[in-house]
Image (cartoon, rainbow, N blue to C red; front, top):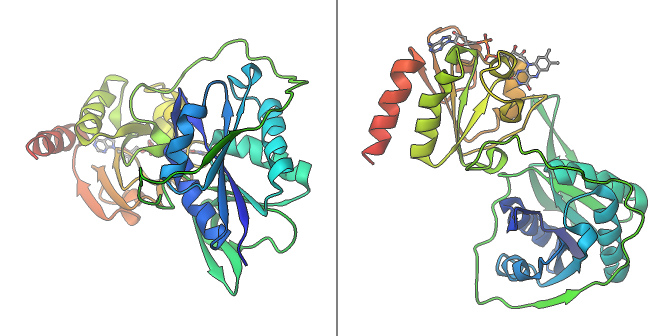
Length: 321
Ligand code: FAD
């Protein structure tokens, strides 16, 4: 049975994040031939609506308000609920990002709806949508469905391929006017901790360093390799705890969960808490001087050697391509 699905587009620094297009691809599957309505929330954001349509949305609802210039769960939930009230959807899809993790449970509670968070795949079985999500820090997967009421789901970045962009697609873009009131959170200041350049959670290539990099300067060759590959630098908690880099780079159970096409782990032992954040990467390369290091257990390619020799060699070779 065809369904109407709302998909929240996520904007950062005036740009739509890739996970928005992945969420639309998920929304298309959930709609089963029905309608996908993109939702954009912010201040002066309607110029981005076309992109959601190019990636598969049939229509886009925009909620623009000066109080929505920065994300707050209060403001965004009022805006999204106003769209839901008008559209009466069967499902709402979010990206499983910091924003999606904060907003989706709030919306689920307001709508008394079931929420499947952190989905990495979805498929139709006998007319029902079955979502796959990792559990126990990625050691097992469970399949879930929402059998009653509105379905809410968040999709993990880099897992569901976006549809091919089609700039000839057109669709209605319409404003939803709502009074935004009672925002109890006041943003005093935004302190950016993430490094400039490629966003770690959406990077296709990640070069990650562990305690084996030995110092802040030890990350320089990793950054050079990441730059040549158009990727981002990440880290183990060991490296963050040792003050070699900022905690915003931490990957793992208590850090970011990433699923790049290529993950190069340099001087990382492969503790279970680190694997929880990266073991679903498509190709894993491990560089470690200890041939017994656990990271080799999940690696597709292992290099036993000193990272300070291996990483610059890789950078030089990739530069030639
Ligand atoms: P180490 O275990 O010290 O490994 C360093 C590795 O570098 C070694 O294998 C060594 O052989 C290699 N090495 C040294 N020099 C070189 C060289 N020159 N060339 C090549 N290799 C070299 N960890 C996370 O990463 N993310 C998390 O989210 C996380 N959450 C946690 C949550 C909890 C509740 C707990 C208890 C722990 C958590 N940890 C997390 C910590 C985790 O258990 C490990 O302590 C941590 O991952 C170890 O970091 P590491 O691999 O960089 O360091």
